Length: 489
Image (cartoon, rainbow, N blue to C red):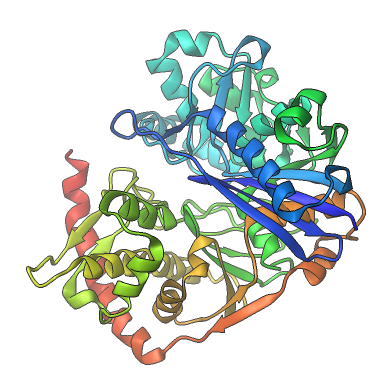
């Protein structure tokens, strides 16, 4: 038997998935790593943590599966979009990577909107905001000029890890679409956009297709990872499209709801839908796109809560199950790093409101779960206002889909049927992508048919939906009341 390996690098962990050529999951492994917050608004990661996670994951998978490394046909990586790492001579990092949720560049983003917003939007389909690499590099130029002056190469997260594996410097066009240096009409790096940050296009990696075989595992990487030297390595792409792909959403009208580090509702379309509150990226299936909304802190809100207040997820969920809908008036807004759809406001802050002495830890736990799902409803209603056609049944993806409580809350709040597959992890999508690249699967639809397996279906309780719809009105009022206060900070 031969195998395909996909490895994801997410907001707080790396997950690896090994599948056989028939689409069966053989082994999985996860390695967590920290996200660093050195100052207000900062959100960084140490790239050495990515490499350590790669090595630990690959070794663990080989041990768990008991397969021979030479039986792995190909490896593909994915990661969170537009998490950038600046490097100097010999491709060495000059500082920690700036995660896409870093908000220190809000003034730079505002200035870009004022001076060049329309031009940028026409080329990139997005308006300048703190999540993009362009304003983040302007912040770096203005605040760390010595570091900026030594930049030779600009990596994106999975590309840096893949460079460790192969010594090949490149990226894919979907990743490039998320940089704000890429013209989505001409599908190439744009000199004018680069000049806004004071860089040149040759600092950015050559662009490949996600399915291109760009190199092979080197001798040094083989020793560090236990993978076989010479194993083909695929270019790969970004985590969200790999999750969408792993869920089986490969046809126009398919829709996914994501409960991962960020929350997304993505619709598969045959064209981009440029809108200042949507994120538009190409699909790996030719001719398709997956425009969607974005909730900035979804599962990361729950992880923050767990890490700050203690307990494991299973214990937290069990206690929260006993709490009634609406948590007796306690409401959580998940704006830990600002918010995207439908506000695009980096100044928003997370909050618990309506706190009473009767509220217990279990109330706060359920409030976090409900608050994130209410933010997804906020996104869905905006998406609905644009009249983009999509199916009435969605697939729930991301780590949050594993929890029965949270998936039930989300179905009730959104009022739609949610299918949950055996795995929708982006690392599965990368393994499937590797299969397309080496000819195991004919195309995206063939890979989905062979690899995606339905696990369960969550049907919303419409009485609960009506209750949540009433709670949502209060949720919106609280946002409207607090937003002006955060602007004054």
